[in-house]
Image (cartoon, rainbow, N blue to C red; front, side):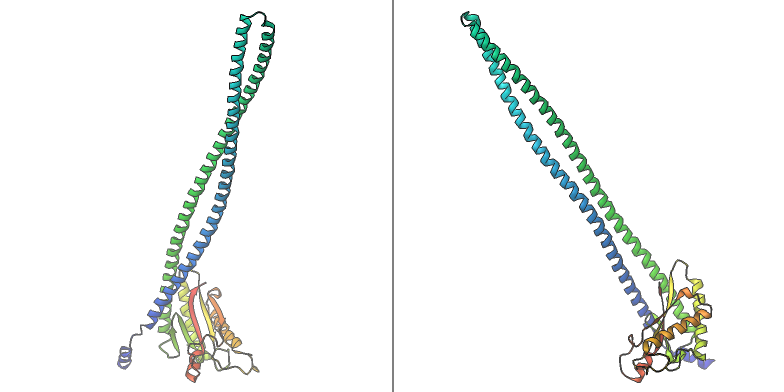
Length: 343
């Protein structure tokens, strides 16, 4: 017991997993912020586009009404000029009538001619009065039309102001939504990272410090030799013992993580770059890596792990940890990885 205690004290503390956890958390947060920014930009652009269309229609209607108002004002001015001319003619006719009446009074010889002239002027005077009355009626109608146009322009300006106010409110709501989404996701990421750290720490304790079982970044890695014989997807007896320990840890984790966190444990199968002969059970490394991942998932389900918390994926030889073409590198690349993530 003393010898084992001395050996544990001589082991150095490995800070690398914690550093990698922090880095992965930062990357997840940055990716989320970028996603929220793109979503907010999309929603804002769609909202602004809709508002721009409404503003364009309102501006077009205002321009049309302004042109109509200018035209009506021009017609009103023409009618007022005509009315002024008619009033001048009426004044002139009344003056002529007064002059003729004076002549009629002064000379009896010219009485008949003056009376005829007076009758003619009276008829013309009545006609001009009728024309003047019609002109006044048209001016009044134009005044009413101008007032109606002004009311329509006022209503359109009010609608335009209301639309701009709604735009400002929508922009404020979008900004507030983005902030709340950022806070919520940051909390979820932080909480899941805490459970991931606890889970990996528990696995490290129950699976011991074996060289072929280790933490790489945000993943717990089993070398394939721990679980499978060469070219096989059947879990060995020794591997089943390790997987039972893993199943117990996952079952306990499922009890601790709150139900509103939608998490899964992803099981990734990886092989080395040595091609298979193609004559055996598996034609290539794709099939071998996928079959090994599925075998681990099925074993965990058979030992009580909820199936909806597991995902199997095969990567073949294309996600290597060590690109060197050496036996040691190929051994490191043959592995099963476990990653705790959100679904």
